[in-house]
Length: 453
Image 1 (spheres, rainbow, N blue to C red):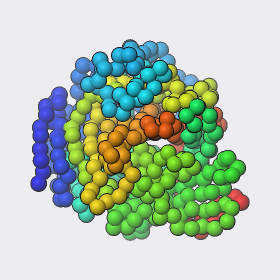
Image 2 (cartoon, one colour):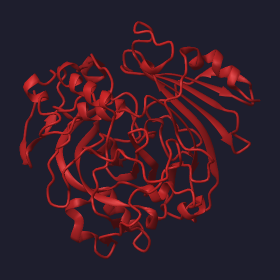
Image 3 (spheres, one colour):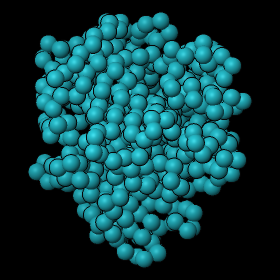
């Protein structure tokens, strides 16, 4: 049975619902709010207090910047309005997550949050707005919420009715259709010592394949490939994933090419709490992209809307003049390079089901309303203790109309170590959106051919 609690929130209503096994799409009358009271993908269009109204987002490039260039900070003159520190964070507690509060307690001398004016920069191509409106009245949850029916692209549930629909919006959100990138990952020791693992990864949504066939691989959402470029001891290892929409009906298909053995093997461990690539045990497979994969091991509860200080418009972390050594510090990344803004988020709690196994017994998610991206996630262990704190520092790729992350961080409160993924300041190229691949590029045979040693 659906349990509802209604809380007025500006012009919209925040729902607190327990997930139902059967979910109906919203009515055409409700969907008509998209582009009017709500943005085309379902956020509240109106402003409130320090949160401005959404007026279309950031859709123009800074002067002198060409499409495909490294990102340039479009707000170079912005200064922090104030800085939250361990000394004053309790004054702002109503707009902080438990994970953020724990970071102030863990690192009282160094952890700080520079707060800037809020800028609602999120924007998408018109076809994503159109398909999201179609999804609102047609897309439904399948198999107890483990899959989607009638999903096109964009936002599956722009007017969500429960926590699981919010999570699906994050999982299937638009990231350019196809993208390739070279990024660095670091897992510093508690004293700050680190080495960079360089990864070349790419993904292509099935509908963007050059030989896309509607009746082929119908349960595949996208194809993902990740090559380890360095260090030498790991270089040449390649991971291939067919990300399925319903991973309970058809589990994620994954293969690894081991450069040392020159063999391709199935990789069933690339799911749930299996170890993340070259992450030194600091993240699980489903920690990538903040959260990914099958949702079937958790019960999902939608708490509602909140106003929270989240990382946003984090262009300093993409600045090519900033070196990795300036970002990667002991305990956490250099918080002087971060930018926090007050935004509305959807809060969702995930609690491990009875009889199911995962190293995280509970997760608390905060999803940005303008992008449906996870901005913060608190991870709890089996004792109910807060264990890991994830923060995603977002940017707007204004040249391709793609909101995404500058870097993802995952802080382990017990060990004092953390993982940072997505560093590309010292890489020669920016993200490559819209490239073409065929289905033949994402087969185990192609994986073997791609091996470099």
